[in-house]
Length: 270
Image (cartoon, rainbow, N blue to C red; front, side):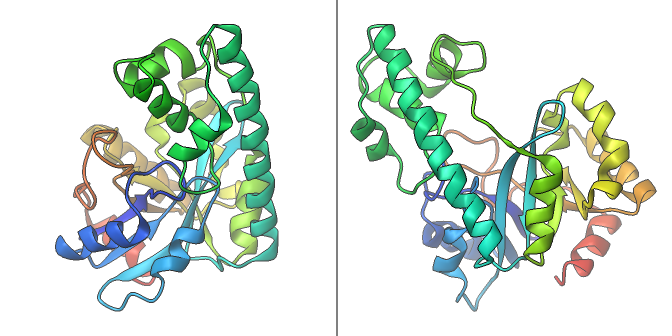
């Protein structure tokens, strides 16, 4: 199907504005796209008036369930008060973490200011990718990949963990805003966490699973579709586009699917 339900913009850690993202989607003949920025949904507000392509309100919430998991929210009221309050709290949490990371870099002889990081962050969602860009720009790393490996990945010398909302609360926020909760890229979840989680998805209130994602092999896609069917859940497809070169495929270029994806998209109103 010609759609992409997992795309990031400059409102979080993407390199394209919402208008640019929609422009590419229209040029590629997509019928629908969801802007799913991390802990942020204002990007949708910029393009919700599009008439040539259906733009779906989306968000990607960082959550916790015996480890880190990500929850996509689709087709919700992006002005919902509880969701907006959560977004505000997460922005504050990210700011506090950024300050702690700046101190860690200073402890390792690397001077980074909050202004440096904010210059790379177009919205309020301060994240490690923005630190990576600063490190490359200032000559402390040759690439963002190296910056993550040396400084920013978990257990790296300047990593600082950030508190995440419980998965139950993440789903409640999305459903409470009238939306559908979808487990993002299950193939990227650790095996230990996945084994505890996949049998609980329906009870937790999930609507679907992102079965089709660039990181999933075709065999994994089939496995996730089978799990969704067994549990009475739907499936979605997305590129998880962040911008070039920091992405696996382009907007709308996760093109795998089948009859159950078509059925799922009809349930979503597409």
